Image (cartoon, rainbow, N blue to C red; front, side, top):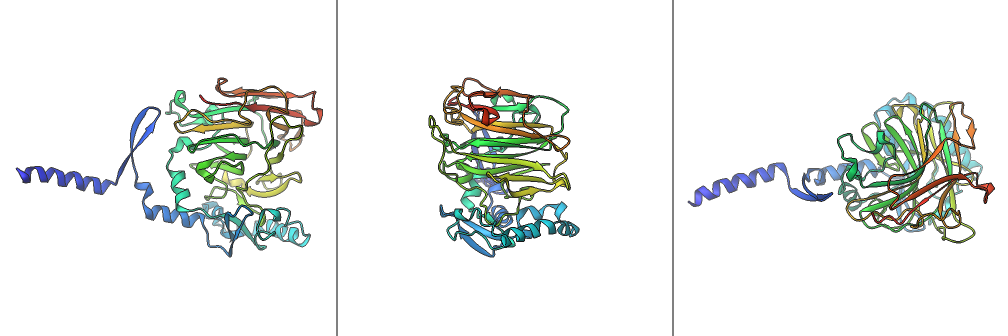
Length: 406
């Protein structure tokens, strides 16, 4: 009798050993079993090596966060197959020379105040945030539904996914004309600090869709990514089957600034009801000469990094949106903007102002009169776009936000 019991038990244990541990996740009220094989130490260590490239030196921001000063040509984006051709390095020379020219003109230290050393990385290197094993495990702990996306149906989710159970919500202004070509867009974004819980995020961003691919940039309150509740600068790239934040994979942004820490915390934040608010300028601009997409940041439109033209399946954008995106793994949804419904006043509402479009002819359209307001669930979030007569200097404005809790 003992042998009859022990035999099946041995086989069960053997199967369990071969196929790996099983953990239970709770998704939309259903219990789902998933293999934990992707959490194996070897795989995690290999991924950490891909992100944490050998650094010339380690430096810290004024908040004490560690960044590696990585050789410009050894940052993660150079692992992409399209970058293996050494002739591409020749095309990099104008960018390389531009980095040196900024240093010579003493303009490379424009963001030096963000660093403990007051300077940033040495010339020829770029700061890449060091990622710990625990941080990587947090990112892997949530399924693909966690990843940022746009409000358009073509990019919101896999066709087999039931949108009625989507845990993303949007309050945005977005282009409504089909068949148009967009070669860039800009915004001045009000910096807010919405309240979120550990498995949530609240992003305020500019989003450009290029066929099935897209780029987002703006400000994220994202505890899974940054392990805090502070508003931080981010970019998110989807190109083909891959996607990642900032410069954490081979389709990510190629940084060109030795003094700008992507993921930097933005302080102070705007105070609701105050006459003056804190805002920052963001731009995603396609270079007319070579097709590269550039991230611009700050009042002087500093070039922070770029994506090569061959990274995306489509060379220009076909949709643009500005505003908020939130996600919650299981809890009621988080705040967006200031966390209040709109009062239709730039003093009390989170906003995106001075929205511009770079059109098919690489001309700036400052009126952008083909934008619609969109909120997927008005019980939690609202959006409104207008040329606001009360603040004529603000240009085209998008007001957005809400308490969530849906």
